[in-house]
Image (spheres, rainbow, N blue to C red):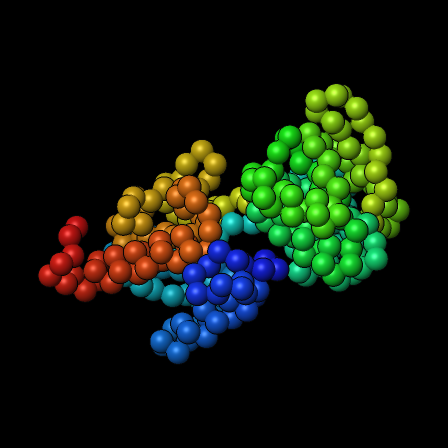
Length: 271
């Protein structure tokens, strides 16, 4: 969320809001409600099978009767030659973070999702010349947003896959492949913004015995419960199909309510 240039589909912000600003507002509201936020303290391991759950972090260990897993997801990589070598030197996964470095230059956005659309529009608006490569013949966002891209001057390369990212010190070109015609060609660019989805950050949970599906997403029921009593999950790390801020918030409300019920056992709580 913090890397999204403009969030237009979250209730209460009819003209949109930057993802970073929305994240800051949410964090501030949580703090005002009494939550303690320990920034930059990564979790090392989880022990969830006992009645008291143990979370081992970089600076301390935390014990609780219930745990809500909300680790989100990480950017999916292309896994092509040059991607890791040029990360931070022309390859980026965040238009808001790195876009200003490419003003007046040409970049390739890779992907066909809403995040690819928003990134392409943002980059265009700050003065970057944008081409967008998608491996299929239509974007997943529909015809309206596609027209918006074209009207902004974004060139869309249909049925196109990235095979290699090339450069000398910095990115200067990409090797592309048209999966319909079989054509391969080199396209000069100054940067590549990869927007092809996310991979769930569920490894620690899986190692602790939390059940995940074939893609690594944590399995939850309609009450956000995992297979371990007292352990809940919400947001992009779960196997729920729609990955949006609004759905993550809704799942978090259910998870928090269920965790409270698990601990306090009010009259309405059902095992």
